Image (tube, rainbow, N blue to C red; front, side):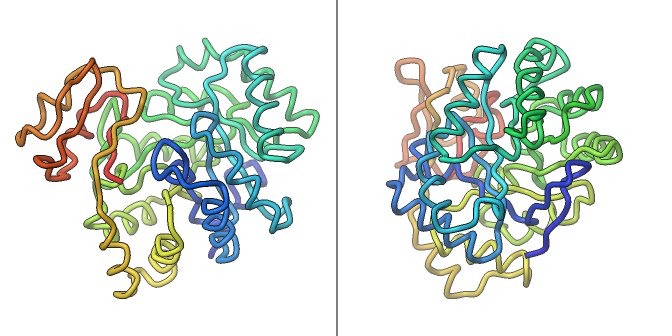
Length: 316
């Protein structure tokens, strides 16, 4: 697994980042032992970079996996919705305690939208900068689904890392298309930002073209790494094979394809109804102001996810 330096941070990360959302209660809901075993397996195969977040509620899985490795060999990125000194302190303390570590490599403000949200949350950034000065954090950054926020981050030298959504057809980009996002990433890359992408499979909707989807993000010259969700050893092997050989062996692909896929709606659904209006198969409905899929009618086309303003619909 090739390693790259993440922009000007000096942090060396593997090209493939373990996206840990999929193992936690928001998706596969694996128990700590099973989840840790998969993470440990990924570490043993050369993936040294793992992405998590406070909202994922899976710090325990990662803590267990860290027991089998040298902590300094692993890069941990986490995220929170902190907006003040108090909330930032609480989020950092929680991460350190529940991950069982005395430092966090990369701490991101979760889902920033624009210069306005960054300004509104700047007190938290200031807290994280002070933690960096003490050696508790190595780099500070943002995650985002919006081009506007990628561009806004360039106005802040202290924002060192950007974690943007990027995939071949632009699923989940909320304020433009994939070409616009790539142009914004070019500017940030040239400004020395460390950039690792998210959702190369569009939340699972590009899984039928996984080879093409991964090849696309690999060819974006402004990404140092990209995170992919993995919830089994087969998926770890499949993704590593894609990186190293550009294909997935047939036996691994067959085992993965046996898994029954479903449409998952996250708890933060706001019940806007965009998915219902989009679906041509009557495969999703609003019940008690939340989107609920009807798997007897859903064809897993993913069109509803493209219209979801909160990016809370995924194929898993």
